[in-house]
Image (cartoon, rainbow, N blue to C red):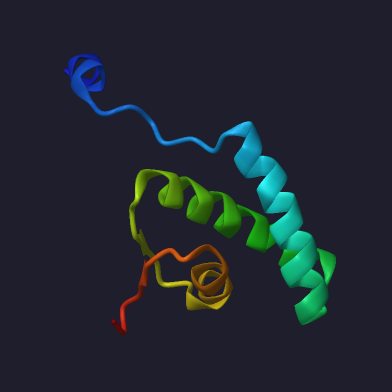
Length: 85
């Protein structure tokens, strides 16, 4: 049954090589502006990859993590929905 559902499911949304390069720039630019340590930059990297993938598909990001996504919403023009919205 799982295999049958997988065959009819929509394609997986994955970051592209361009997303990875842009993520590096975002981590550097925003991390430097916010004076983030390496651990904060690593966590933000995943948020950036999610945001860039969502932007490519015209999707909103639904998250409990408003922090990093607030930067990405402004920078990338994506919609972020949190529990308080």
